Length: 260
Length: 260
DNA sequence: CGCTTCCTTGAGGAAGCTCAAGCGGGGTGG
DNA sequence: CCACCCCGCTTGAGCTTCCTCAAGGAAGCG
Image 1 (cartoon, rainbow over the protein chains, first blue to last red):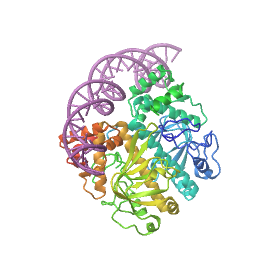
Image 2 (image 1 turned 90 degrees about the vertical axis):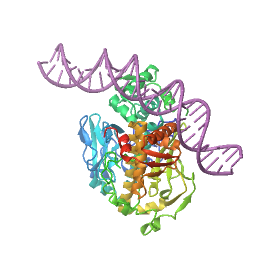
Image 3 (image 1 turned 45 degrees about the horizontal axis):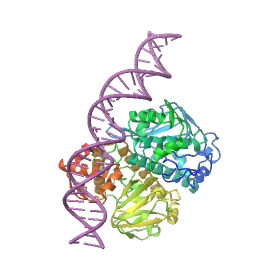
Image 4 (image 1 turned 60 degrees about the vertical axis):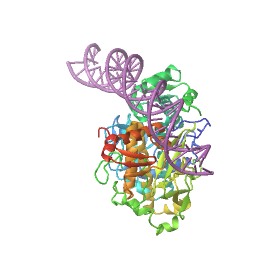
């Protein structure tokens, strides 16, 4: 998932543009892409399918259901908890002074949401459900209990570190890629995240509007729409509204990393 | 330094695009822009002027001098230490699969460099001195000692959290701003960081090439050069190679945040 | 002093944006 | 239940912005 790294299978993998997300899942392919990732599973072994158990019974609140468009927290809210996505997806959004929106993260089941508030009193972005979703929350008070255990602490560090790295991947995309590269990268990233979760890597349910996708990867919605159509025309994908089927991973990868 | 936040003086401040930097300085204006920032001073009270003292005598290694262009660490290196910039400046650079460079951070005296490796075995970017510089290193082994103290730990969390936020600011810039906005924002950010350090906020010594600036804010070097010239023509700044003098903060701010 | 590296400036072109129109699907109210 | 409407998506045409390519100049360094 590192930009210059290889995936589990050895094939080059696109940068984790979709803020790939703080996965806590016991991964399908276990020995995960980044070495040392196992520690995380150890520290916060939560999967959407499993019951919360053991140490975490004590710490996490019961799952909570959020309808589509429900706000988990807003920029300016006190940082009160971390959240694990049990089902559904969330976006994190920053609003600039002059009203422009920028989506900074896209979080799927197993990801952690709320790390942006860690170590600070306030959140600095909104977190909003993109579809019917469930989250388990870990209130700050209990988080402090957790902080006494160095092992769990180390896990948290790794989660934050991943967040930093994911942001850097997004920076690379926004700083250097053209529109086609961005979209190919975006699609491959979502695909990869689904594979890691044991889901079909070819059938993506975007559950974002074109505008949200565009905001995430620094384009305009028309450009996203156009390029999706172009990719479809070239046989790389099939587009049916928000359902996108990847037909040609190799081709997309070629587009995502021109010379490499 | 937050995107929608106000500076100490109450005037709106540009996003901390220059990865503004993990300042550990006992700030000139003490009660710093972000509430709670004082804690940091408490935790890692290092300033370039002061002697390392107290608890940190034990932890930090003696200052080390690096000439211009010297590599502090490289992507792929084992994460072995955190570094505090005592003098000079550093850039952090990511290299993509296909060879493109992206500068992800610009670190001045008092900033911490190396947080990208925290919680992970390997660094994922290069850190390189932009001029004659001094750093104090905190080796991982001693960092672990530090980790036993919850207060210091909290400080570290805040540093990482800031890194996350700074990245998000850069994402906002790269995702939504036009060239003029980017450059105005970049200049204002450097200015702000100098002010915070008690240095003249109007005289910037960029100590980066136009190409590095361009990479940092997602443009091409010719565009940077052109827009600096344009700003000079409009009386906003004075350009003499890498020495830039800000003449019209208000104007720059107007450019940086169009409607706001 | 000549080299290299960096910076500036111009002209032309391409990528992506803006504006605009039309379509489709799903939800709501009649 | 149907019609309508709204929202999201697609597609086109023209335009702006920024990039590319190119040439010349300045400054630092051996």
